[in-house]
Amino acid sequence: MTFRFSLLAALAVLTAGCANNSPVLGSKNISYGDTKAIETVTNEFGSTDLQMIAESMTRSLAQSGTLQGRPVVQVYDVKNKTSEYIDTREITTSIKTQLMKSGAARFASDNTDMQSQIDQLKLQNQSGLYKQSTVSKTGNMVAARYRLEGSISSIVKRSSDYKDVFYKFSLQLVDVETGLAEWMDEKEIRKTTER
Image (cartoon, one colour):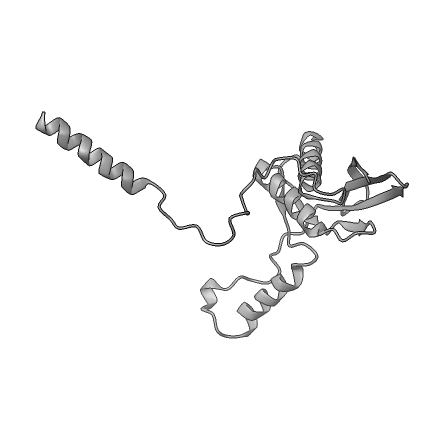
């Protein structure tokens, strides 16, 4: 009986120690939400739109059969042809991340990161600061077989009662050597608000 009581007491202490007793700082009107929940705060481009586009395009490209043998792809930032600010780099990063997780492709330094790659190689090879046996050699970067590029555009219509926004996202995979588009797809989103 004493052993059973001691065991229960020890479990109670361990459970209490595992409880989250961290203090809460800041405003009480802020809460965490489900990142996959449909966001309908405004009819401007939002997190739900980004997730839908990234998932749709990744699935389409992965299922197309074009990316046989995990080819090297260079990703270009999506062009924003809308009248609103959209962080298109986030769309690009989401698509790239999902393709990387699926194991469908490998990625070369993209057009915005290429200068950083070149600077790092120069630093290692020309500064004399690094042990020669550990230096990354120049001339060994892997060239991309494909480039992935796209754009997002919108058409906005207004009346006295409604605002309708139609988004169209286009993405294509182009063979660098031949210049041929090997895969293309589009995702359309319509958002309407009543005034």
